[in-house]
Each structure stands twice: as structure tokens, then as C-alpha cells.
Image (cartoon, rainbow over all chains, first blue to last red; front, side, top):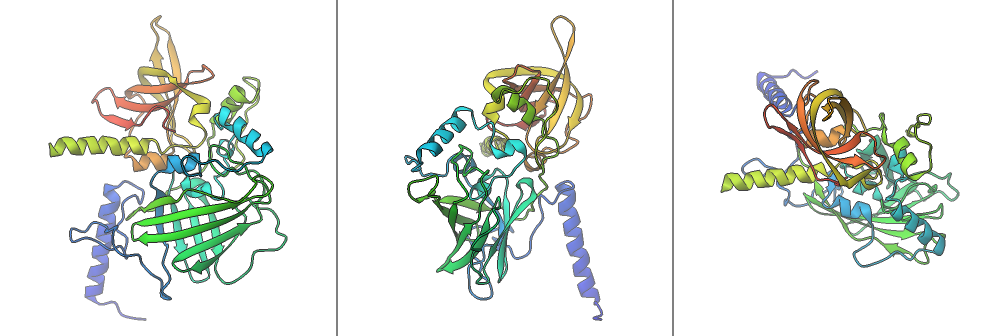
Length: 277
Length: 130
């Protein structure tokens, strides 16, 4: 056992005092917490324009807490301005109904999370943890996660369907390219309601620009719903420095019954309905 | 001038964060064309997910009292915009601006909450911002 000297002890106490000070000023949560490894300007503020960090093997390190710079736009509609998805007739009809009913029955109404790819455009941040064999995304929304396996494995051939599918990642230059398949129907591609089927395959490209900025675009390939693959607008994300994820769940869903009464033909005052989470 | 700019930027930041509340579709449940301005005493606060709800008694013109329910964002969003779980206490008199529920019930989505005793603005967002 190493004997901790007085200098180290004093350093530890100083760090503890700083943490306590930060904690008391920010309330009980870890909303404001200086994180080690954050490049800083001379005045101590996080330097979001600092160069992109890299892992030991030289790959871009995507790790950090991120939030979309324009989440309402991305979350509403994945497509670039002035473009439309090449929907097959049934998909176009379903999309039209979803738009006309203000998306009352989107998955969140039932306490189900955003899916692939729009979980990153939810109004809450997400945290990327990159390790050599797997990169993990922790979504603050409803406390969910995805794993991108980067250990060389292939996608399963006949997967059981999953909400988030199965994901494998590989590096193409400076971009982490994530292929995902094995979806079940249910999630919407965006809040406007672009649908998908179990034939969906997505290819997401993650590119870190510098310490403070990340870009993601995604290609949607679902021949049961769209006449050809199509690509999202490039979504941009800002690093959220010196903070942590907070808890977000769905234990008190007061909205579902009212929404079903307004839009779904449910009798007012019927038995209580709850979300699925 | 600098102070004024800082205030403007602060309000803009709060307004922006006030939009970060989505769970269900705002437009499906509330009507931004039915604005409400009500003042009353807080009777209950539910600091819970996916939305914080608070309730307050409002005196009507005929002397009766109606208990109104107001939906706000989720605790994570409100914490980030400076709201704490003890920001509003039972019995506090607050002035609320909100959008009424489409079903005509005494429920609404609040986008401005001001403490009557001090004028402190506890929360500010935009109608329909969810």
C-alpha cells in the first residue's frame, strides 16, 4: 500500500472542497462540476474550439455529453429543408395522418423513447463513452442506451427485432460509421412521423469537428417504406462541458388519457390509462 | 448597456431552455390559441417525470374557487433552467400564463410563472414551445 503524503492529502482535500463548493452552488445535482480533461482558456472556461481529442490509437475520441444545436428542427423532420422522403403510398398516408393529428400518438405519449436515429435529437442531452471495443451512447431521455460494437463482429443474420436494433461500428477516415439492423416496428424516425418497418437499416456517420462540436448524418434504407435510400440533413451537436446527465423517466404520465380522449375516441372519464414504461 | 444586454441574453437563454420540455406533442394536447392568465395559491406540486405538474386554487368572479392544474417541463429541463424542487412552495401565490388543454378541462401548459409576493419570475418559456 502506498503511503499518501501530506501534499497529496492536501491536494485531495482541495479537490474535495472544490467539488463541495461547486455542488453547493448548483444545488443537489451535478449540474455544474469541473471535469478533468477539459481544455480551458486562460480564464478557466472550457475551450470548445480546442482540437478534437484522440484515443491512444489515434482515432477521434467522440466521448462527451452532447446536445443538438437545433433540436426542435431536427426532431421535427430529419430531412434537409425543401426535400421530401420518397415514401411509398401507405407510408405517405400514415405520415399525413400523423401530421394532421399533431403526432398525438407518437411513442413518447406512451412513455416509449425516441428510436434510431432520432434519439440524439430529443430535447435532452446524450453521453458518448468510447472504448476500444464498444462505443456506448447513454440517452438522458428515459434513461436508455445503445451500444456500437467496434470489435469486428458482423451484424446478426436473423436477429430478433429490437427497438434500437443491433449496431456495429467501423472507422472510415475520421468518421465512425455505424450500421444498424434488426429493428421492430413502433418507433418513428422523427416527431413528424416518418414511419419505418422491420426492414429498416440505418447508417450513421459520427464526425467530431473539434472539442466542442460533433456532426451526425444518417442514411435511411427501408425498401418496405421508401422507394430508395435517403439521407438526413447533417445534424450538429454542441458539447455540454462541466456537467452530467440527469435522471429522466416516465413515472407520472398524466397526458395519455387526455390525448386519447381528444384524438383517439376514448370516452371521457374512462378507466385510467398509463404509459408502457 | 452591458447589463441590459446580459439581461436580454439571460432571458433569451431561459426562453430557449423553456422549449426543451417535450415529452408528448404539445399541439395535440394544448391550444396556444387559448391563452390563460390566472393568479392563485399553490395547493400541490408534483416534482415528477415526464412532466412537473402544479395545482393552484383560483377565485372565480362569483366567489367560487376552481383548482387548476398546470403542466411544465421535466425536472431535468427545469433544473437546467434554474428551477429547483423548492422554488415554488405550497401556499405561494403565483401568476401564471398558460395555454389551455384542448379538452376544455381545468388544465393548462404553463409558460410563465411569477411569484406574486416578489415579482420573481420562476419560469419563462414560450407558448407552444413544447
